[in-house]
Length: 107
Length: 118
Image (cartoon, rainbow over all chains, first blue to last red; front, side):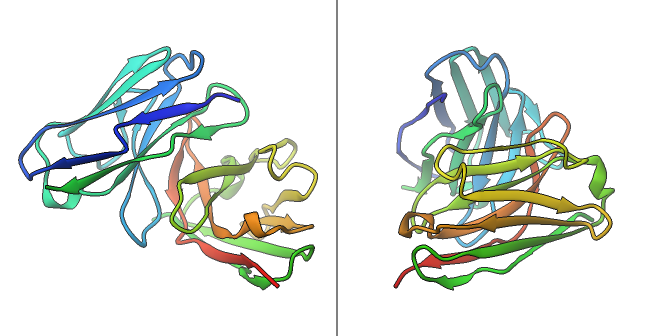
């Protein structure tokens, strides 16, 4: 099983600041990695797929990069609605796995 | 608009069974793989199972293999998860999700809560 490790566990930032979230894989997943956003009491939402492609309707301030074992989600300028938990997920190997999440909280 | 509506959750005793359903609308159901993802209270996401569009192939997380069975009825646009031999650690919100092409989870239901407790 591929283990995804996200860092940091919590990111405390102010609106307007840049957020950089990391996801490391225990073995190469090529570019088969996605990022999801989850707000309290809501289902997750797909943000980024195949490491760097924005899903439909996702604002341009969200971007993804990386390949192999190291991936980054960047939010260029945090909006109030961006404070949430973010998960990475790989579909390279069965079983599909998620990272443990990074909470982006208001500083 | 894609809509996914889960049902069937509830309180069940350890060792018991439950069947979850997910009614889909707004897309051609048989064209897409579907998946179940769960989230224990206050915890992260865990992928549980996935099934191909035709229903001919399926896969499971090791934690549920041999106890859970995923299936679908394309004539009813409905996805199922039969859960047997339930354990306390199966307590979670269970989400169904549509798999996009490429296979990521691009639409989610609101979830149904399963509580395993005596």
